[in-house]
Structures are given as structure tokens and as C-alpha cells.
Image (tube, rainbow, N blue to C red; front, side, top):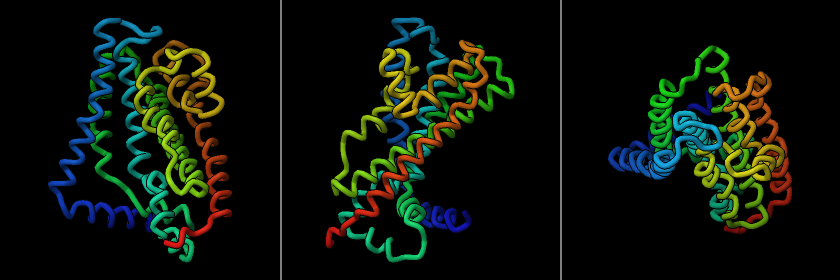
Length: 258
């Protein structure tokens, strides 16, 4: 871990060489995400509740999903940009080094400007928490923290899965954006609003609901099932098949000759 944070410090220092560009890009990330927030605001200006959830409760959901995505996009950016490593031939260099491939890919690219989105999610959460009417016990605080950690794990796993496909396609597959950038957008609302079929898909296939919907039920008091509190931990299990597919692709990797 010491070496990982040393790499992170080096990447941050390199990005801060052009401070004006860095802060302007971070501000852009901060402002762009407001489009989704405005959409939520306009909806609740017309309707007071959505599937039984109030505006403040949905904002908690929105902020946690956005924060989880921002963290994974920042620290797992190497897998999100993995096709470029294949196309440029840099993956060949990685394979000749003694460190593990996953470690080197993670430390090859970290985009700290994405923390602008994290700043917005924190501001939204600061507004939503006192207006939500939730009794913030130790268990409820733990639940919110696990939702954030589980969300970051799911999004990072999707980036690893995306990288696995890149071994066979060379180019990145745009349909994967449905589950990454798309999930950041429609994950602003509890998944039950999209219907039972969508909820089942994001429960048993891509476990977004395990950190987004079911813990939110417990957090807002709509369910007293304490098991929902720990469901975000199961999101880490999703990493195993994603990593296995990445290793499968790596085993069949053929250099592009770049």
C-alpha cells in the first residue's frame, strides 16, 4: 500500500503542474453533474414522492451513487482507460515488469479532477441528511458508509470487466457505459421506480441494488430487515467473476505490435 500511495502522490503532482487547468477541469466535473440533480429537482417540483420516497431520501440515494462512481472513476481510471494501454503497446511493458498487472494498471492512471463530482455529492448529502427525517443512529451511519464502499466496489468491478472485453475487441465497448456512466444517471432514483424486471436484473446480474436500493430501504425506515444493512458487502463478490474474466482475457492476450 505504501508504494500505491507513492504512485498516487506522483500522479497528483504531475496533474498539478498545470494548476489552472486542473482546477478548471475539476470545476467542470462539479458543474456537469448538476444536470442530473436539476432533473431530480424538477421531478419533485411536480410530484412530491416517487414510489414512496421523498425528495431528501432520493437525494441521499443520488449523492451516494455519485460519490461511489466518482471514487471508482478516480482510483480505477486505469481500467476505464485500459484499451489505450493495449493500442499503444504499453501493456507489453507492464507484462515485463515484476509487479502484478492489476497493481500496475491501477497506478497507471488516476484522474483526480473527478473528485469535483465527489465534492458535489458531499454538498448534496449535507443538504439531504438534516432534511430527510432519518434518525441517524450508529447503524444508519454504518449503512450509509457501506453503501458508499459497496458502490465503489461495483463500479470498479465494472471497469475491470470492461478491461477484460478490451483484450478481444482492442477498442472499448460503448455498451458498457450503460452500466457505468448510465448507472450514475438513472441510479439517482431507487431502482424500484423502473419496475420489477430492472430491479431483479440489478440484484442478481449486476448487483447495483445491493448497495443502492435495499440498504436505502433500511436507511429510510421503509424496511426493518437488518440484513439489508450488510448487503453492500456482497457487492465485493461481484469483483471475483469480473477479475476472473480479466485474467481469462490476459491469458489470451496478443500484442497489437504497437
